[in-house]
Length: 312
View 1 (cartoon, rainbow, N blue to C red):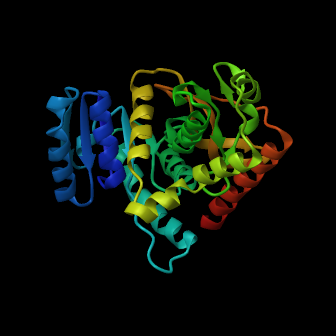
View 2: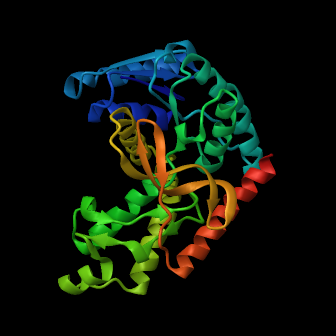
């Protein structure tokens, strides 16, 4: 099973490393405009193989993506000082106008997994370019709020003294400032959060909720301030999504993909729980949110819809 990673920077290289650690696939191809960077990263990651899983990691160009089942898109440009978000989006859109057709010429059956930020808008753009090659939107997905959801579960698990694997709750909407933490739907061990807290003699005050919300919503800012970039969490999220696709595991992940209607906003790409497998997105699940959360999801979807409209 062959996986491509286009863009061998921090996120792309870390995703490839995470795949080696998890044993995802059989061969990983790193493609980057800077071929020397791709070659160096491939060498470095390949040297970890004897300590992990038997994968082959190589560098290449677009032609080497032939027969890839999944291609992870991490390519893009960084924001320049004084550059607006819209200007950045336009430059990254120009990058995708070249990258997406190049991938699909080599690997027309590949699923595209977008990680380039702002991931909601970039996934919407990637789907438009992919449609020109006959690829349905269900095979173009973005990492969306997978990482935000993991942050939410981690913080809740720490507060409640429970392994985060047993905490269930989603972050939906934009991967960004308007994302929505679905507090009303959180469960632990099959129990609603409030019931679990009562049985354990615990509580989460309003101040605690606000602090968890802040740490989820602002995590990237604090990490970037401390070390310049985030890549371990998102790299692991991408490896997990690739694993699900390659093995058709039918997992429910908070991915983003073009959707006809989200909370009353038409033709928009934001994250919701999606049934995901080898054929891409199989189903999207509308959540029974409380009124405040539903209104917040509407605002979040509107924010992304406005960005898409401005770009076009």
